[in-house]
Length: 374
Image 1 (cartoon, rainbow, N blue to C red):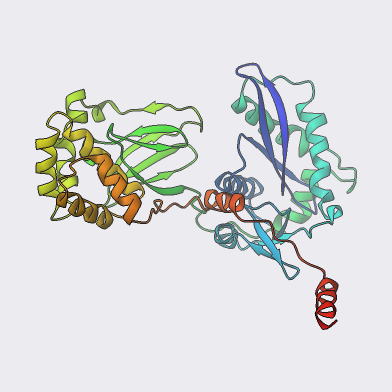
Image 2: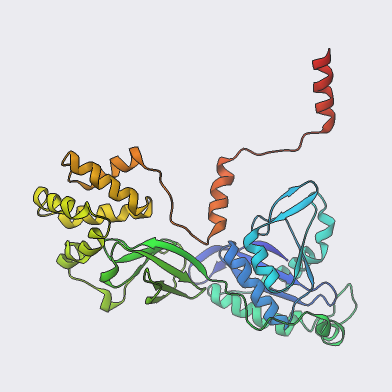
């Protein structure tokens, strides 16, 4: 399995870099490809699932390059696999094998077919958009890749697969792996949660609550704190910055930004909340709702108990202001991001911060010790 980037000049939308996902069976050389705009963990496992369903089974083992979505690192000559990928691949009982660093010859079977894709599929063809490219790729697999005579095996690919390889594949599990992305978000004052720069509406009763969302490849589902489904939307591509609003979720400006929709959520912060809210209404009668929402949004970075402690501290000094609560939390509490199943993002952040570690030659330590003795 591997990826290869291509720049396609789409008739609708112009030039874009797409990534070709390639999965090829080692015996028959039967090939599966698809095109995506990103290469994150969830795209990886979704394309795997599609490949397994396309073949009607799966191999007992698969060779992988050392991309971080699959292999976190090597230690003592052995790969350390990404736990999230382990959860996926063991569901299908397929054993991953990591290419040893510095041994590119082990990848010949997967990299050579990219030349066939380039010359036979992509060359001299025009594509309207990504979906047209993907549809053409499905046609190409059926009409060009499967029926072609393979140079190495000397056999028609689909014939060799049907005759000798198909029955050797492992059967698909009774249920496919759930490749959804799951995370927590605090509903904004406007009644939206943000995911990949897009904003999805929720019923106004859940403003400032910590909500769970589950994103499949085509849909976004939003759940209440008690995990009751409260909204569902069509998923839009990352980077569109689109507001996706269900008409029944819409509120007038006064209701949307007033205090009443968030009063109950604010009072639930703790016993100090009613006194603080009373002082807030007296000090900021026209902007009380704004400050209450600002404070509740801090649940995205601080535990509710810490926000309550900040309210009690602010009461001593009559600091009835959202920014005052934020300053108290920055000084007295520890930030914590809301939990997420997107482990690849957390790892990417760590990789930018942590220094690169390289293995020292043992002879360097011998030299160090000999110098100390001298």
